[in-house]
Amino acid sequence: MNKTKNAAFAYSYLLPSAILTLVLGIYPIAWAFRYMFYNYKGYGTARFIGLDNFTRIMHDSQFWDSVVNTFVYAGGKLLLSIPLSLLLAAILNRKIRGRQLLRAVFFMPTVISTAVMAVVFFTIFNSYNGILNQFLIKFNMSSSGIDWLGPKHAMLTVILVAVWGAVGNYMLLFLAGLQNIPEDVYESSSLDGANKIQQFRFITLPMLGPVLQMVIMLAIINALKGYESIMVLTEGGPAGKTEVMFLYLYKLFFPVGGSSASTQVQEFGYGSAVAFVSALIVGMISVIYFYASRRMNRID
Image (cartoon, rainbow, N blue to C red; front, top):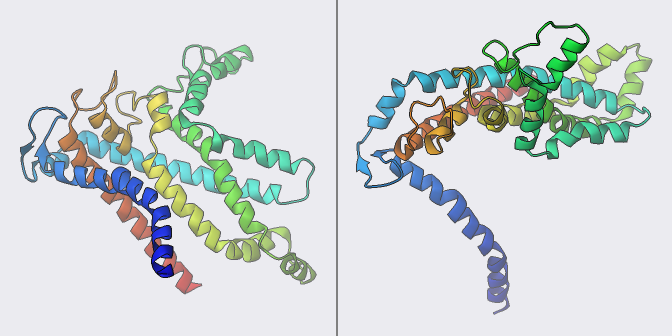
């Protein structure tokens, strides 16, 4: 009897989470999985069309352009954010004055809303009266300013904004890993004549390996799925130069003004198919990374 009461008590705690998971997680996935085989605009009758949505994806050049943009965006973000966050973690792990304040300052962007952050950066990078262009013109570093959100620099701009928002989070993870490395190891290597660069190469990086693998995995997934700041800064423009995969998907479900998506009409059926293919791409990249990281561990 007591076991039954204990089980009922435990399940009563699990029930709210189970309901939320079912309603907000499993049901939407099942809904999208069904409608990716239908021509459905979000209203009227859904018409079964089989694999036509996937055939359309194969010939949708704008979707594949967004996939290419996603890889450029993700690659740039990873190449800048991970080394920078590791460098900051190594600096702030040392006993320097004000390091607690500096840690809080660098971590602050992580807790700021992505939309608010993007609005702030829009005022900075605005091509006509942005703060950065005003600064460049005032100090004669540019005659008429730089079109930061134009075709030439837009992708670089959104990457820099993404790096600013991600560095603090990865820095904190690296910092936790660095603090778990015993000081005795560094002291022993110093007695053997190892300099700081050699210590970092042969002690810090190998012992930071598990944390580094986790950070890279998180960075890859977040970069491939990220689109919020791009939507605020450029809406995927100009001419689709910054339209990434999940922003294209968002526009299919929620068309926005000035959208460069192929249609201004909601396309729930086609959008569901695009969501499935996009998730498949992210999953494949994740599997490839897991496989590569396991091979590296075996080699080590």
